[in-house]
Amino acid sequence: MENSEDGTRVSLGIPALPSASPSGSGTPVPDMPGHRGLLDTFGRRATDLRVSLIDKCNLRCTYCMPADGMAWLPKNRLMSIEEIRRLVGLGVHELGVRELRLTGGEPLVRADLVDIIAALRSDHPELPISMTSNAVGLAAKAQALRDAGLSRVNVSLDSIHQETFAALTRRDSLHQVMEGIEAAARVGLAPLKLNAVLLRGVNDEQAPELLSWALENGYELRFIEQMPLDADHIWRREKLVTAAQTRELISQHYELGPDPRQRDGAPAERFTVRSRVSGELLGTVGIIASVTEPFCSDCRRTRLTAEGKVMSCLFSREEFDLLGALRDGADDAELVRRWQEAMWQKPKAHGMGHVGLGAPDFVQPDRSMSAIGG
Ligand code: SAM
Ligand code: SF4
Image (cartoon, rainbow, N blue to C red; front, side):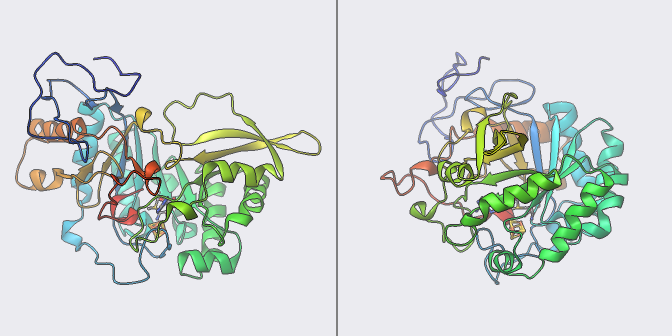
């Protein structure tokens, strides 16, 4: 099967089924041929697995969660260690998964996190296993996580100012986050990447300062465009700090240039950062332009929510209950088939770039980012 350069659906030489359609496309999905791997009808192959370990979190970032009133999954609906092991094992051995990221909610909130990582590492000695975390509580666990086999960590940090941080996260936890970042770097959870979401009038003007701080400490900062995945539905296209505006903000202080390294399916477009005065190369910065410059055509991600549902895209409106099937006694072949089927229906693109631009076809998913696993 060939990858379709223009993003049109791959031709399989078989008749299309009139029944199913990828979310929102209204176009019938062709029958799934026998194949290995997590292919979709547009020829993309998912090799990057994101597993959410828990929907709970100890922060309440305004662009993600509501201030209160979030209903948590009961513990018995979360995937257990053994269930995670089995599904990740199928992903790696049967479906071509080459990279694993643990996320949430906040993975550090899960009491058996170290055991989960140790089990996955013992099953997959060579697999890159990373974690996305807000770093609250990381200082106490960094060494144990490293010893258990965690490869590296991405930490979310939107501001290095206590007041701004507290306004954004609705918690006064910056100090703990800083301790967590330092501990992660100290124990070698590297390269340490930082994720920042810029909100207009809140932390956007701090972008150059945040970058300076990251460069001085040897962390790779990535700015992520705010996506319409917040529980409060406050996202507005006209308030978005776009990738272009982020580049402009940073360029007032630094000279940005193209990073010669291959992007290779990475969501972030990387830029070299040089001093405007001396021209000295100071490091790199990434910009993840999910809304205005989407990278759907090269997406390699497949997601499992904390309750074991496959999501082929952050914006999928269809979910496939893999854990339910597992608990009902499905054998490996059946679980593999279901996972493939879920990915086969992955939509061509999320369509959110057009929200507020006269294309009303985008519908915000019911799940917020914390309940999907970013
Ligand atoms: N709690 C962990 C954390 O914050 O790093 C892991 C889960 S969090 C959902 C994963 C990433 O999603 C974070 O980097 C966060 O900044 C990002 N995120 C959450 N809501 C977002 C939104 N509406 N738009 C863009 N990024 C978002
Ligand atoms: Fe929690 Fe991460 Fe969402 Fe912030 S972005 S509320 S830290 S899950």
